[in-house]
Image 1 (tube, one colour):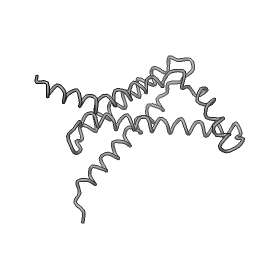
Image 2 (image 1 turned 45 degrees about the horizontal axis):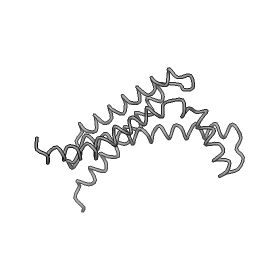
Image 3 (image 1 turned 90 degrees about the vertical axis):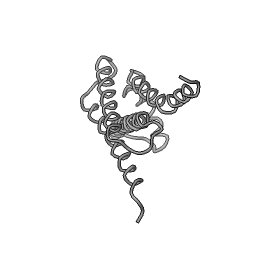
Image 4 (image 1 turned 60 degrees about the vertical axis):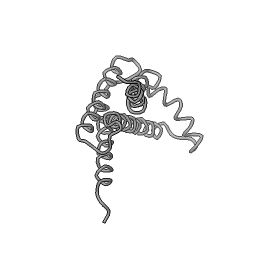
Length: 156
């Protein structure tokens, strides 16, 4: 292999694959006890009370739950989008196989993440979170497909 091809492959890895692999690794890092509900609650509550004033326990529990579930959607949408980008590489356009593989990776990471959490005393692995994570991955792929379709349609 020539030096030019090797540099191009290294550049493609750094540009397309490294972000997707790094994000997947961060998901597993965040699935540890440091990001349990108890830990994030200690950070979120003082911030919200600084911002909004005193919050009842019931209201805080609801807000905390919603923030954590929104994080699931966002994290897995990002993961799925990064894997789509990695699979596409420098090629333009949209291909359903890229989307399906990116969705599958998101679902497998979600499954592995929740399985890991089921063994931690401070976390709870749940199939509902796998479903929520998969929905986040699916929403990203739907948005990418819609954007790609709009981009290829000629203006009227």
